[in-house]
Amino acid sequence: MSGERAQPPPVLECRNVVRAFGGLKALKGISLQIEAGEIFGLVGPNGSGKTTLVNAVTGFYPPQQGCVLYRGGDITGMKPHRVARLGIARTFQNLALFRGMSVLDNILMGRHIHMRPSALATLFYWWWAQRDEVAQRRHVEEIVDFLQLESVRDEPIDVVPLGLQKRVELARALAAQPRFLILDEPMAGMNQEEKEYMARFILDVREAHGTTILLIEHHMDVVSSICDRVAVLSYGELIAEGRPKAVLSDPGVIAAYLGTTERHAA
Amino acid sequence: MFYRLAGVRHTSYAADRALWPVPVDRWQIRALLALAVGAPFLLPDLYLTSYLLPWLVWSTAALGLNLLMGWAGQIHLGYAAVMAIGAYGAIHAVRLGIPFELALLGSGLLSAAIGLVFGFAALRVKGLYLAISTLAMQYLVDWIISHVPAISGGSQATLQAPAFRFLGVPVAGDWSRYYVALAVCVLVTSFLLNVGRTSFGRALAAVREKDFAAAVIGVNAFYFKLMAFWCSSFLGGVSGAVLAFCYYRAVTPEQFNLDVSIQAVAMVIVGGMGSVIGSYLGAALVLLAPIVLNNLVGAFARAAALPLHQEVLSHIPLILYGVLIVGFLLFEPLGLAKVYANIRNYFLVWPFRHARH
Image (cartoon, rainbow over all chains, first blue to last red; front, side, top):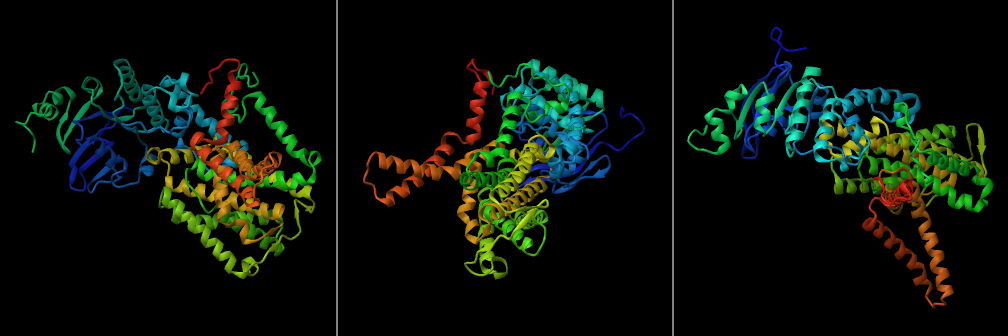
């Protein structure tokens, strides 16, 4: 399943994506390609448009110009719930788990696109819904094993510590069996050990399922060690793209991060 | 002590999702069911028809509203109107000679269809605006019912419920009416219990909690809100029909005015949003509290020989009732269901002091 065979279309292609909020141009024409099986890092200072780009791809803030192609098909402006059905899953920078549900139910929720929820099936649970619930549970348990969440499986999500909540959110995204996974700062607020766990999980996901991954992250050590390619955004523009080592030592990138004005891309 | 978790082991995923994994809960349910079935033998007919029967019907109605408010998180201030549609629909259907079972189903479908039309418009707005839109439904339906003689039978008219048969058995006495209400109540309760463990219920809860997070895993929020409206209206229509046929045995527009809608909302909030047992407890409190408070205040005034005016006496229970509801909102916003859960959790770990959650 490695994507090194003869030129399939890129998993994600953004062509000149523009998105503005009022007068603020959050994305000023972003073009990039993510190939199958890649772990693609997206970095940039706060407010540089990383999350906006993800929101443009997943349909929350449809681009005003340009287009977004997923595996060669146009998904520009498609509604988020339709995008999800194409096999694109994402996590959120600030956790977006369903409070009041158990960890297990949160992950089961990730199976939504593989289930047929209906009131009638619920009414006839024992004859109709139970078999499907059990079958989906089997998938979920695999993910619970994979991400080592057994001990918190039955806890309400609100009482689970933050580091594990991030992992539950990854589990929920994985439950959908996505072919393209977008992780928006999965390591924010984590300590070194939790970060290493998460980095290992991300590598394992690709290894096990051949999932293509777009990773937004501020921890440069992680980005440079697990990403195949990195793109850098600054003020809504793509200022560098390529191998992590080369990109992260680029003077323009350092300037954008540290705020030196001399080589500021205009 | 009572709720022993020790020894409760699951060997299959189906067993893990059982409704009542703890044995004592299962015994409780069996005992309650036995009591409910045996109630006509145990209770005087007066208590059966004026307390237990309305409680069951209103619990059914509260469960329907709770699906919308508690699970899907959408407020509805026109629930009595939905029930009215069901009640009038069923009575007219049975008068036309349609069998009661079909009329019951049809009344639910009619309510659901009309509820869906309103839901389609109302769900484009959220929160307070949704409350106002559903309030509009209440007024509109009230007005249409009382101004269209073909529905209401003329101004100030009361439509008597015709004689009917349920599953081939003529439903005539208090007992048979009670059993019809019980059957519908059990069916609706089992549906709501299952909502708690299927993808349908999870999707509703996901939409309630975070609609953008629901969307990103493929949940069409608008569709599920509509489905919640549909199901809730269906259950409202059915319970309205049961209320008209089994309790009032007649239908007038005043039975389903705005006050009744507010009462239904109070049942859900006081009982506990998103809780099955809460719907029962809420319905019990809202139905019984005025009666109990009336008797209590009356007895107290007599015992203390307070020379209170009749007017004052009749208003004190209303004040206390209001205090009760405000008190719940302030001190136990999760309602009576949470009180029950606290007690249960206490006994879950007794004699130790720490509850699990």
